[in-house]
Length: 194
Ligand code: IDP
Ligand code: MG
Image (cartoon, rainbow, N blue to C red; front, side):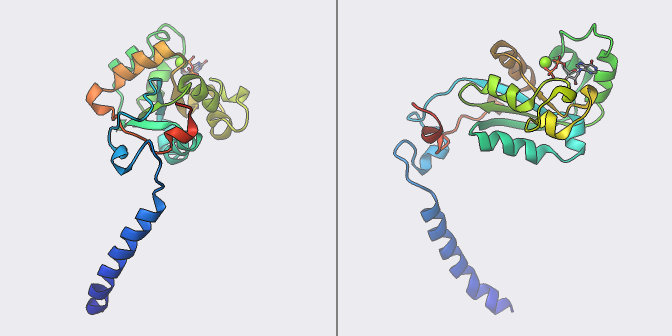
């Protein structure tokens, strides 16, 4: 049995190397090195903050939500899981602290970990809001995250920045510059015109 494994390993490694080589298309703008930083990759500046809220994490929706953004063609440049402090939350929701629902919003948002992400791409702020759907899931069309996964405004699964300025402010609040990764995505020249 052990002998079989030892004999199989070099074969598998060889197959794996060849298959990987054939599977990675050769696009002129980005060679394999382009998976790291590459100056020939279009420098798309627009970024937004998306967070899977505690109900989304508890319900194991993180993967499905990430999948939607990947599938659309956006690029993930930051990702982390954390337990939010009330202090951070009050800065994040600074415009809502006087609302009657704010105490229950704090309770909800601190009830468990959140997964917070920065996504980059053409028109990503506006497109993400459309993908996430309106604040109240009752009004959210099917096909949106909130329309597909939630029922009530107090448990609406996901956060998305609502403007370019808001996105910039929120990204700085949740992430340090060094936590955001600049990398070349090989399909960028296919999903966007340079
Ligand atoms: P948004 O998340 O769609 O941008 P905001 O108005 O910024 O909506 O509100 C932030 C969050 O506060 C909402 O996502 C929701 O979790 C919560 N929220 C907003 N309105 C209500 C409400 O009327 N009752 C309970 N929670 C609310
Ligand atoms: Mg908002």
